[in-house]
Length: 141
Image (cartoon, rainbow, N blue to C red; front, side, top):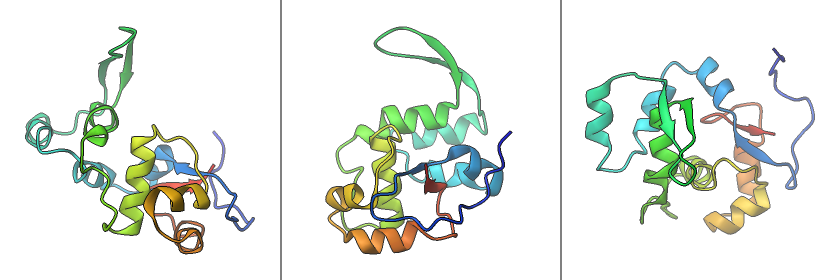
């Protein structure tokens, strides 16, 4: 397994970021609580009732392919993130960036792309997520 130490290279406006779920899971025992806070009203009661199930059979709606995965992450990215109002332009910056990655299936984006999607300044975004401190697993690719 590769060592995931912070890079010594300072990110720039063109550096791509993404949510490194493996890093987040290994560094934060409460990562699932953070994910649950982004669930839509329809799915909050469901995940409170099923507990901490981290693996389940997931069925791709278009292909019917069955894979193993985290049902919380699957519902969050394929349902809740697609709901009107999921992205809140006036919400906290890190939450807004995190939600954009969820909406875009965690496709790598740089600070300038994130700025155009959030309406926030690219330099502020870079100064927030481009440091050695990692928020919600958002790291350079």
